[in-house]
Image 1 (tube, rainbow, N blue to C red):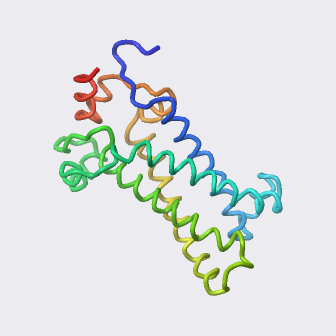
Image 2: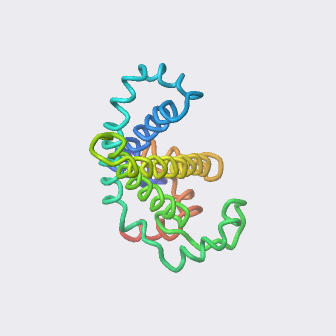
Length: 205
């Protein structure tokens, strides 16, 4: 039970979905790197061996897409960009430097919204491009070659998004990790980083 100085940022369902996406994506990154290039094949031994990751990589990929779809349905309304978000993007350098003059953020800031949209799109591309690689005999060689290219590019973009997400959530905005682990943040944290959301929460609670 949180004390009166704290407010709930994420429900248990939201946190479970988030970590299901995160854990499955990390597995896909590691197993994907092992399958991508011989230099990373040592990761296959860590994950159970080549045959194991060849079997489980596409299965976990489908599971991650299911989790990602659940996340999209859960947060799609909160992730819509508005005029203040566009102004926020123009001032993002101030946000990173913790300077004043950044437009107030709602439950999610514009950077989080763009990352959400990007990762959702990459998830769709990874699934669609992964199907011909999973069942190569059912598709033409030309389609398989294009699928490899799309799969690799989408994976690189998604990995970049993951790195940015971890950096922003740990180094730039301290307290974000705790919010996703416990579901709660202090009122001071909410007012500092998501003032529009904090006011709305306090008005309706």
